[in-house]
Length: 389
Image (cartoon, rainbow, N blue to C red; front, top):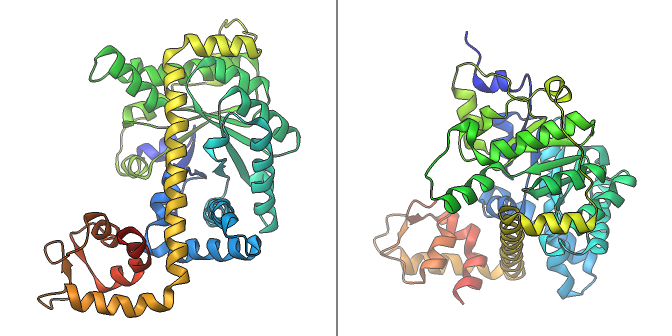
């Protein structure tokens, strides 16, 4: 029987699942997994994870000691770790957990947050060798990672787009970097007015290939994990990279398709190349970053996007916290709402029957099929009251 693309790829590259959905991870059997605030926000809205969210909030309430203003911040960190712990129960390798992107330019607070997150993992019985603290590849973030690595706290430097970032990370001794292949492609397509590139000319693929070859040529131990893919061609062109973090849909495609996977990145071939070394101190880093418009744009955009995702997750937690406080009322309110809106008595509330606002309907319609079931209403009633007033 012919081997699948996935089976062949994983003989030369470690597959990492890029999701916060435990069920996807169970099906796809990657070695490692990584999350970010957007993925956790999406997963936290699924009904099957409601208890994970509620558990994080209950823990945060107990830790806050009555200080309501501290509950959301504590719950945010706890939820990230709770998802990470459940992922570690599925994958044999490591999980990456992200530091709040709003701390990306604050070295001291990033160090503090990294230590705190590892402390939560260790208190729950996880060992630090199975956790990567995910930090944006700013100069400040790289300096924080350097300190954490010396303490045995391993780091994954994310939002990496330029060679200057990659070299600075390697010199700092970080465990792993995540260059964003697809986002580099996005920028070049827009800047150059192109719809596509041949896979071997894809700017993101070219960038990661250069970083990989530089690392192996100069003997750096930092692992390269290509991330943020837009198509299977990008993934296959990086076969042989240390790791590739791949979204569930692409992992499923790789598992479903057969063909021949050719190794494109090879450490022995890279060591045989003649690649001059580059010194990156702070001045050189900032000058290179300013000169690299793509890296400058995409790093700023990525930090802004992850920051917005964290804000959205905080809002979700606030809504859920409000629902928990009024849970006794919610069951009764749900029954009353059902009687008021299920006009034809068919067991569903359709968009036409709904007389509330569209955002509330969308929040309750968990599976997006245009109908609210009794279970969906019961699960989401607290959040709906906060959204709808």
